[in-house]
Amino acid sequence: MSADTAPTHLGARIPGQAVIEELLALQSKESPRSAFQRIFGVSPLSSESQTWYRGALGEVAVGRILENLGPEWLVLHAVPVGTGSTDIDHVLIGPAGIFTINTKNHSGQPVWVAGRTLMVAGRKTRHLYNAAHEAARASKLLTAGAGFPVKVSAVVVIVEPKSLTIKARPEQVAVVTAAQLLRWLHGFNPVLGPVELARISSVAVQPGTWHRRPAPQGDQLALQRRFDGLRILVNQARRRRVAWMLGVPALVFMTLTNLGAAVLHALGGR
Image: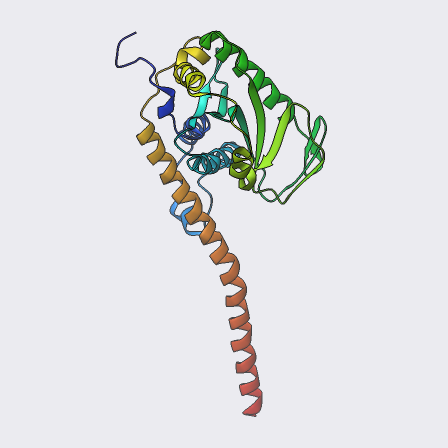
C-alpha cells in the first residue's frame, strides 16, 4: 500500500463521517431542484436521504459535546469495524474507562426503556442489542491489540428526545440523553492509569486494530464542507416553507379584509 492511499490515524475522522459519506453518495444521484422547487422550499434531500441526514445531525451534535470532555480523553468518531461498512459512532478512552457510543437522533419523540427493551414512540428497537454487541466487539479487538484485557462499556445516547423514561435500567447498556452525557461521564471515578491509557490509545487509533482491510480516509475537510453546504440548503428550504405557511394565510386574510372593506364602501355609497 502506497503512502498516498494508506489509511491514516483514526483521530482525523470527523463525527458522523460514515453516515455523511453515505448521505452525500445518495444525494449525488439526485437531480438539482428546479427554480420553482427552490422558491417554494422543496427540500434538497431525497426521501432515502432523510434518515441518513437525521443520523448525521445526531452524530455531529454528540461529537460537539464530546469536544468538552478534556485533554485526558481520546475521542474517536465513526470508527470502521469488521470487514464491511459497519462503524462505531464514537469510541471514548479516558481515566474513567473505555466507552462505545451508539448515537440515536430521536428528536421530539418519547423514548421508553425497561430492561432489555427500548421503545421509540411506542415501537421496539434493537438499540440496546446493537450497542452491547459493539462494546463486546470493541473489547475483543482492543484486548487483542493491547495484549491485556480491556473492558468496554456500551452507551446509547439519545439526541433531543421529547422524553426519556427509564422504568428499569438495562444491565449491559447505559442510556442517557445527549444533554446528560458529559455530566454522566464525569461522574465516574478513575479506573485506568497513564500507562494503560497510553497503550490502549496507541492501539485504538490504528485503523488495522478495527478493520481487516482499512480504506483510505479521504479528505475530511472537503467532506465537512460538502455536508455543511447541504445543511445550509436544507435549512434555507425549511425557512422558505415556514414563510409560505405563515405568509399565505396572512395574504388571504388581507385580501378578504380589503374585499370586505370594498363591499362596505360600495354599500355605503348607495
